[in-house]
Image (cartoon, rainbow, N blue to C red):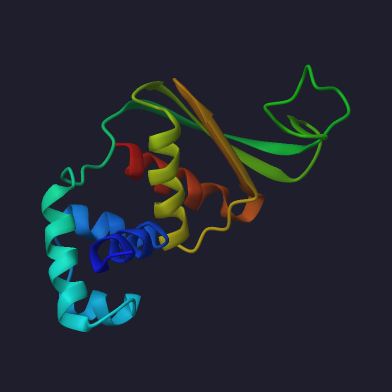
Length: 157
């Protein structure tokens, strides 16, 4: 493999660096040192070329309505579930978790990824999440509900 292909592969393994390259906020020498995939100057040059090929970073644009619903928990009735993954279904009135839902134009899995990154940066632990076109749902503890609501609103505005 070439230095360029090794560098691109290493960047793909670190999505934060991929986003930083797209945003144009990378110190290429420091990033090359971090990736440690070859001679520092060659990797820095490969990063500069890779960044030039990437589309600019933009936060998702949405027209989202964000809501919070407390009392979410496991249920045996999949008809009532707001979120289901494998055998686990979460429904209102069944526990002590909180669901943050967003609906509207531009709400999609990409918006969910952005919201999850913002929640992580804010120190809000996410227990479960899912999205389809027009709807996303994030599950947090009841204690983190209000903070999560604010973070998701900000992330999608």
